[in-house]
Image (cartoon, each protein chain N blue to C red):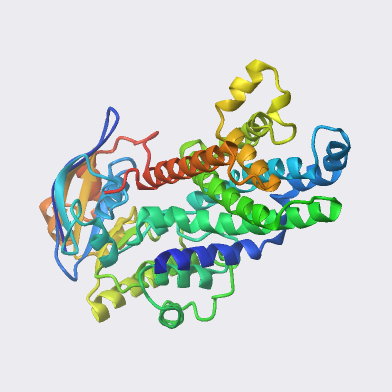
Length: 247
Length: 242
């Protein structure tokens, strides 16, 4: 589903991503972990066509990232860290607009929005704005936005940051259900490693723009003689604080 | 094409949902029309048919020229990024907004012309309609450049920079008083701005001189300005994309 070789991104003198190789198979849930400023979001933005890599090659959802970014865009969903809704517009209108930009007719779009909102436990919120919604509701709404066009691959950038434990558990249930039912492939970043442990088939740990560890959570724990994924994470990325680093 | 109509329709619905901003962005030229127009008409400098074309350019600057303000919020709330991850072409993402701005501007321009007629404007209908068309061409360029500026400047700078820039651009265009009154240096500086040619082209249309060189220059400069705006705007929407 994702095959990347030697992806790099430099911003002026800063090497944000220094040569990443990635392989994600169809139907996998892969966690992309790393300290702040490690290059997670930059990598995600490259794989979702929002940022042009400085060098490297990548195929995402069967399309070449450089030769055919429009095909990549048609086949992937992307849920950004900061959400996708302005607080002053009814969410139904925004969802229908987005669905229509993927080529659905007005009727198809409305139907898809209604179904998807019901599936994500948000029935009948079309006329509301995000101002009146809880953090968990907003996140599920962002995920609905990313799923409108039935993508094969969904990118989630820190989907559970700032949510209470109930909302987090609920969100993971939705992600699991999407994989079981639709065979959706999910590539997500998170700082909650116990969640990554419970949810992901495989995790990749990135630090200073390079992948420093990867494997199934249990493999990684036994490999490092660690009790938790947190311990693995600290073992491979060190304990130094990453202050001043951007997300 | 479908994506373009979908986007334009969406933005139009949003604009008409906010009547305050529809009125507000046309308020300045409207105030000049009502509070300055009667003086201008009696000043001996020119008639309503000289002032109103200038006010159309001023409207372009205050309405289409400030259009970029809307995208500042879309950028901040992740709406723009969400649109950029769809397969819609980057030029369509820009033009969807620009077309909305043109429709809004046309409605405002018609309102100004109707009010001016009530105050005493007399001009050939064909000329006024052609002037509305030329104003639209000009505002394609203005709205596009406004979005370019909004996506380039730091977001807190957009409003102060643009609202300050509008003042010299409007004064230099000769929108309020014809540049034929200007000293040589001011005339030269004025000729360096595209709006000078637009104002004079529009005045030619209001005067019914359809074969004048002023009109030719007005059309050529406005078209070039629109092409420049859309080109810069698209490349700005494209930037950093794969």
